[in-house]
Length: 241
Image (cartoon, rainbow, N blue to C red):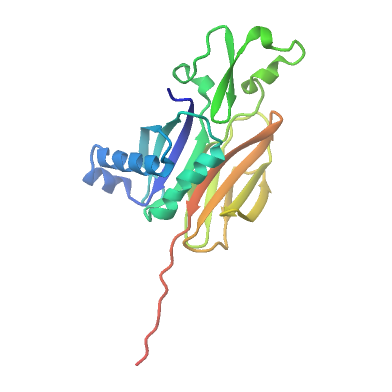
């Protein structure tokens, strides 16, 4: 049985209308995405479900997948494995991985009605009510506090040396977000903002970047990661006779 679930969003260089013309049912597109994800995660066993595909910006297609793994892995580890897809496949612009809160969906957790479901990164925990300390019961269920996950984390306007990321946070409080851009393990940028969008410029062309956005909530670091590849640049050479 699957033990942990993740949302995977893949941005592809393909106009959605053109994709529908050559693949009306999107069956071949779904098979390709399934193959890319399962190959990147080998030898781990996984299950991949296509949730939705829609037009992105500037002749792109956004596809959202539900990924299930037998054992929980940190989101950063799954993101690193799937981020290799953008490195190997030219048409793939970015790959984003987010934790799924299994407690929101009865089908994804096995907690009984007498138990509290607590979301963990890549997994969840069932806790009996009598285990709850009388002094701080809300610590057992982080959803009781105002620390929702970052959602709709997308990349826009990708060029050879820049891109923009945006996200949403359904919170009643104001939060400061910490955005970090990595090339491999090297930290390139570290910026704090209260906005829910940020543009990055002055980057190297044709390079895979990892963007981690986070904020402090419920005594922990609530974060999500996106893998983005900047556009390649073909050098122009002048030939003189």
